[in-house]
Length: 205
Image 1 (spheres, one colour):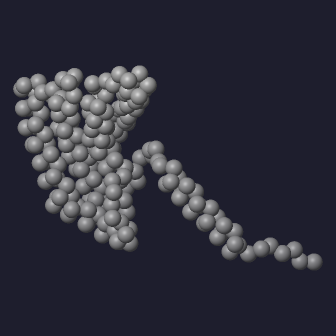
Image 2 (cartoon, helix red, strand yellow):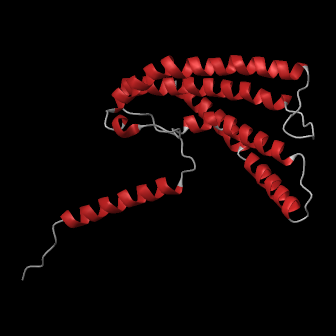
C-alpha cells in the first residue's frame, strides 16, 4: 500500500506542479489585454478564452495534488479532536459514500462532453475568435482519473492508520508560509516552556 501511495502522490504532484505554470500564461494574457485595451484602445478577441481555459486547466489538474497534500477545505473543528483511528474510519466511509460516486460521475459526464466536443471540433462562443476548446474538455476526464487514482491512495492511508493508529508520514513538499510560521511558533513556545521549567543551577560555597 505504501508503494501505491508514493506512486499516486508523485503522479499527482507532477501534474499539479506542471500545470501550475498555467497561472503564468494566464497572467501574461490578462496583463497584455489590460494594456492594449486601456492604453492602445485595441482590445483582443482571445484573452478571455485564454484566461478561463488556463484557470480551468490549473484548477482541475491541481485537484489530485491538493488532495494528496490534504489541502482541500475541511470543517475540522470536530474532526481534529478525534483520534487518528476515528478520523481514518470516518474518512474511509465518506470516501465510498461521496467521493468515489462523485468522481465516477465526473469521469462519465466528462467523457460524454469531450467526445461530443471532439466530434464537431467545438469552438468557443465567448468571443469572435472561434478558439478551439474541444481539447479543453478532455481536461475533465484527465482530472477525474487523477482524482480516482489519488482517492484510492487516500483509502490506503486510511487503512494503514486504522491498523497502526497514526497517519503515515507524507513526503516533504512546499508549504504555505502560514503553516511554516505556525510550526516555528509552536517550536518556540515549547523551547521557552522547557527553559522555564528547567531547574536553575546554583553554585554553593
